[in-house]
Amino acid sequence: MARLTYVIPTMVAFFLCSAMAVDLRNLNDRTVPWYAQVIPPEPFRGFYGKIIQCMWKLDPICGKQVYARIFNPSTSVDDYCCRNIATVGVTCNRYLGWALSLFEKFKRYAGLIDRRSKIIFIDCIKRKL
Image 1: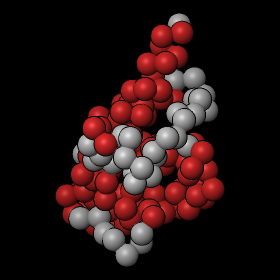
Image 2: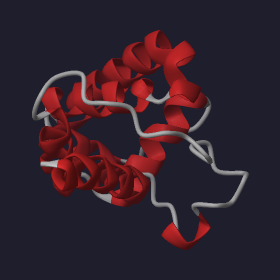
Image 3: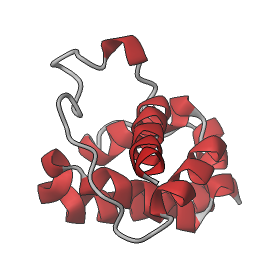
Image 4: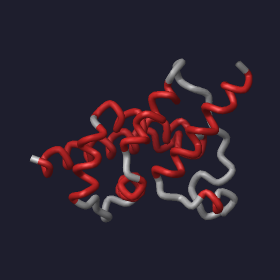
C-alpha cells in the first residue's frame, strides 16, 4: 500500500506536467510554476485516479492553452482545443482545475482557477455548437 500511495501522486504530477505540455527534463527549472511544489494528498480516495483518466483525454497542447488562459485572460483557446475540452467533459474540467488548486502555490488562486476554468469550458461548448 505504501508504494501505491507514492505512485499515484507521482503519476498525477507526471500527467499534470504532460497536460501543461512541460518537458519533464525541466522539472527542476525554477521558471515553471510548479517548481518545488509538494504533491498534495488526495481530497478523497480515488481522486488522483479520476484525474489520470481525465488527463488521458486532454491533449497536452490544450492543457497548456487552458493554463495560459486561466492566468492570462488575454490569451485564447483555439477551436481544436475547444473541441478537445468539450470532449473531456465538465466533470474532468472541474477535477483538473481542482487538482491544480490543491498545490500550495496555487491555493490562493483556487477561486480564480475554478471561475475561469468554468468560463473557458462554457465558451468552448458554445463554440463547438
